[in-house]
Image (cartoon, rainbow, N blue to C red; front, side, top):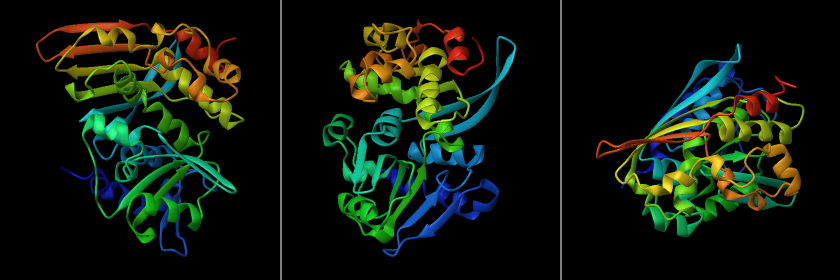
Length: 313
C-alpha cells in the first residue's frame, strides 16, 4: 500500500522553499524536528492554505480557489477533488487526534495520523496503515509545539523526532479558515461511516465551499467556517453503491438544522461531540452511482450563510 506521508513530501518542500512569499516560517527544534508556522506568529497566505490542505489530505486531493457570487456579493470558494477519499479524508484529513500537554493544546490531523493509527478502529474500518519513517502532521493550535509535544508524536508514530514535520495554524488564521473550507467531502465520508456505509465504495469526490472571512476571535471564525459547509457546501461523489444512507448525509437531516454553529457550540459549551452528528454534513450532495444512477440530496441556504458571515442582518 502506498504511503500518504511519503506522498506529501513534495508539498512540504514547496512550503519550505517558498517561505518568504507564502508568509510562513520554519525552524528546527533541539530534537531536530521541523516545525512550520503557518499562522501562529506569521500571517500565512492563500497559497500556504492550499498546500496545507493538500498535505492534510495525504496528497490525494487537489485544491484550488474559485470565485462565486451570492446575492450580488463576491465570495471566495475553495474547491477540492479527491481520489481514494476514504484514505484521504478519514485516514488523514479528519481532525481525530487530540494533543494535550502542560501549556499546549491542539488538534492533530494529516498523514501522521495513519502512522499512529489514531483512532485504530477507524483504520481497521478503511483497511489502511502507513509505516513510513517520515511523519507529517497538521496541527490546529494557537501556539507552536515544543520538543515535548513532538517527542510524543514521534513515539506514537514509531519514528524519531527528526523525522517529524509539524505544520501549525490557528483556526482563525488565513490558513486555518481555508483549511476548514476544504472539509465538506470529509464530513460526508465521516457521516457515511457513522451510518454504516462502506466508505471504500466512494471512489472519487469533489467539494466546493465558501471560505469564511477572518473574525475577531478563533471561535467566531470556526463558527462561520462550519456554517459555510453546513449551509452552502456542495459535494459530488462517485460511488459503487448509491443506497439510502446518502439521504442522511446532508445537514438538513439534523434535528437542529437552522441554527448557527456559533449557537450550537455555545449550547454545547464548546464541545463538538455534544452537537448532533447529523449537523456535520454539507448543504448539498450529488451521488453518481457507477451503475449510472444520479441522485441529489439537501438544500442550500444563502441567507444563513450570509448572516453567519456578517453580510446580512
